[in-house]
Image (cartoon, rainbow, N blue to C red; front, side, top):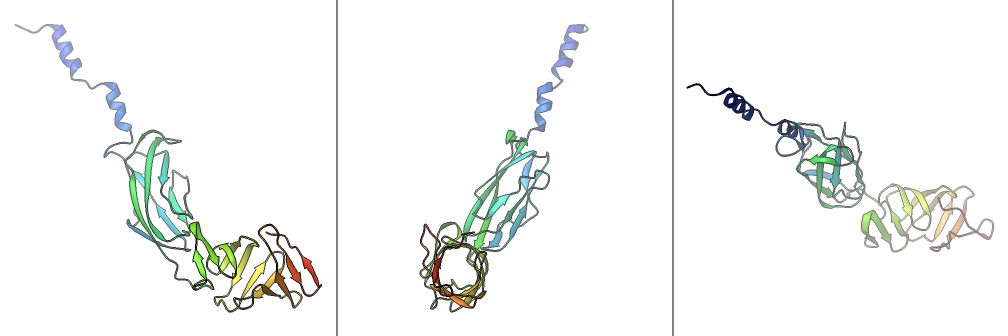
Amino acid sequence: MLPSLYSKVWTFKASIPALAGCLSAHALSGATTYVTSTGSNPASASEGESFSFAFYTSGYKAFSYKVDGLPAGLSYNGDVNGPIISGTPSAAGSYEVLITGYRFADLGGNQTPAYSLSLNVGASSATSPWNDSNTQSLDAGWTRSSWFGDFYGKNQGWLYHLKHGWLYLQGTAESGFWIHDESLGWLYTGKSIYPFLYRNSNSSWLYDQSSSSERKFWDYASNQAITPAKK
């Protein structure tokens, strides 16, 4: 006996996958799509030196990323077409950076498993006047000198002083080095000289009387106190 037409149609319908099931295959989940990189993992960086790490999704494209656990000085560029972590790490240590891709912008939709980047930031080996027993490393890249005060940026080049603002340091010996100040020009000082500073522009001396609330120097050339702007 031949089966009825109704039975044939029902059997055929039962073999067709649901449309919703077909659409769900585009989700960023499981083994289909995941974050990866051609860079080394674990990765190594050095305190005070530039670093970059590119990554992407294998499978479907992610339209937003969440990056957690970055050390101070590094950031994610926010470009889904060329996602990169880059910058200059300011604190040595071992970090676990977690990167997650999302199907839609603004961290919307399904997500990939978190990609774990092991990042080791080595201590700076660069020579500077602050590599002595009179300095102390503080949090987030700040340094405290027993004679020069608190500042951010440890090596030669630009540093930000808590009392004096941005200064440009040139020299590697604490016994004497040049500092460029936006308001005062080139100044010469050192551990055994400070708080006296030699001012190159008028071949005279300054005496630092600055406090946390006011930047102030005694100017021996004019025999009076001056209060240059903090920049």
